[in-house]
Length: 215
Image (tube, rainbow, N blue to C red; front, side, top):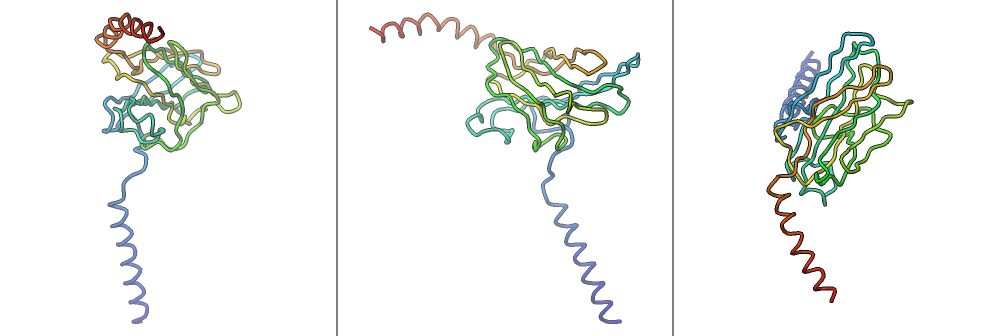
């Protein structure tokens, strides 16, 4: 009997210890970018179309100031990080195959990628088969063999920029396999007018210095 009581006491002690440790451990992945308090801006854009073909989805997003988002190469720690995560909700009848984001030509986007182990956002998810940036556009595409299907989500899609977002949302285009494309409002980098003006004013002087150095 004593041995049984001792064993029960030890088991209870082990359980309480495990609970205490779990209570102080940092959480991994907040499960949603939209609620990340570390971001300078975060929210969720909902899509709800009841006409055939029905399509229901949402995009969580967050933008991080330089040095806050940890899962990028160190040499990019001085950049703003823009994160998006696509969710194809359970009532949908079509999978998600692409996200195109319109950006300013001077937005300073230099690194585009995805993150399956984001410090925030839902863990895992479907990875894009291609991604990249060109003047005025950032693109993420999913192959026909591995789209974001109903009741699934993408990995965290991200890019870096020299600039913070404006209060006005930019335009994105979410593409589906069979339900067409949908415009979405997303945070995008916006070069400050003062910065653009400064660059424009400085250009002639820089060009003059460059020519003098070549002589």
